[in-house]
Length: 528
DNA sequence: CTTCCTTTGAAGTCC
DNA sequence: GGACTTCAAAGGAAG
Image (cartoon, rainbow, N blue to C red; front, side):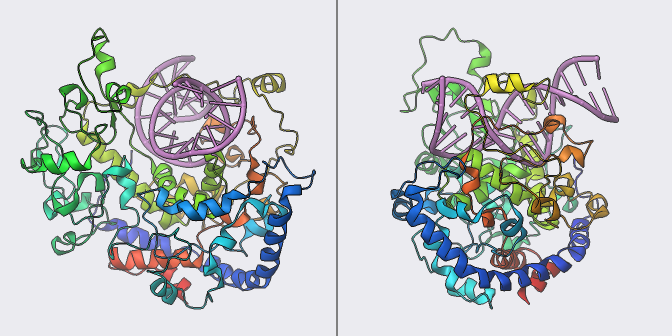
């Protein structure tokens, strides 16, 4: 359990330490790679175009390509993939695929597999000279080349803010009241108390003045207009969270902002705290999506069934996924979450320490808040709520078992290579928490992508067998990953697996500039 | 309609 | 304390 910041702002210092080592070579490497990437861009483009044109008669040697859907790129442009995710925090620019990154040249992706990725075609931003990312950021802040990029963005919007939301619909980049800073409940007394400065995240070093401008990191707690958004039904509010009590005028606001799913109108829909936290998913409500919450005649349900389902707080990776999914989906025609998640998993490993640290910090706050909202909640409460997942193939999984379980053979996937190791798997996720910078510093920068992936066979399904490097890590992956259903992963553009591009770094730069007093060396370098 | 897939991390259980 | 299990999100695919 990550401890709270012990030393008031120490984490910042820690982050600085983290940052100092970071990307010294990586960023330069990226830059140089980008140079060469430009050189390859034409090839990539032409390759992409050619294959896009020809993929209707895709080669039979290709890896299980799903039938090409000519409508995909067009449709995506029409419906606007980015807007599909209302929470998408986005940066005011596109993440330009790092064509020179090791994933491109080293990954399991064949260039011929770009076919399903249309981002190059969809994002004319690629034509923008990469010389001045900052300029691009500004100049493109309101530019929406394909109606896929959110152009309306609060100037001070925290890129990660929406991640805090348990449900997208709760988030609104409004201006939170300063009094809604994370309220700390004394775990013993249950009495709200002002959080000690050391308990506040370094990522939200918000002065009281700044609080009025920057959306609350815990967005779901903060409504538009700076009003608390806890819906209170009559007598429903009996949470010790007194400081979060809302005035009566909120109910109307809440009613308009919350769907019936979220704003239950009967006591059963409320968590025992009286606060319909977005993490709460009431089974009863789920059953009546139209909002008719009339007491079920079948009230014979067990008390447990009536309990709202309090979801687990999202971990760092989940938060990252929520943010990045839309981007990946927008950049690629792939829609299968399983495939997207593989990409995201790799990109996660490719994140720098401080980038991951942000999510770890957010996740820590999530857990903290979650534990405050639901003091008695335990992850165990949700055990068994889901259907029993089929047993992991890691245990006594024999080839027979595997083939029996899986409907499709994965013949096209090469045998799992032991060395397949995602770039950052060298320790990336082992970065438990920013609170333990010493551990994080123990080994050099995560990304160092490479050698191992260079030899990686043509398969994206080769999930890094971290076990080889982290015998202490979860045994979940103790056996080579087996793919039961061949996903068209190989058709992903390698760049989707790449670490954030310099443009992304620039976004982080902007972000940090807004939210941190100290500049990050990493972005400073990248700005060069 | 339900389950699977896939990812990482947190937290739970079991030995 | 290590190994293992479950669940969190997501949405297309498959049964």
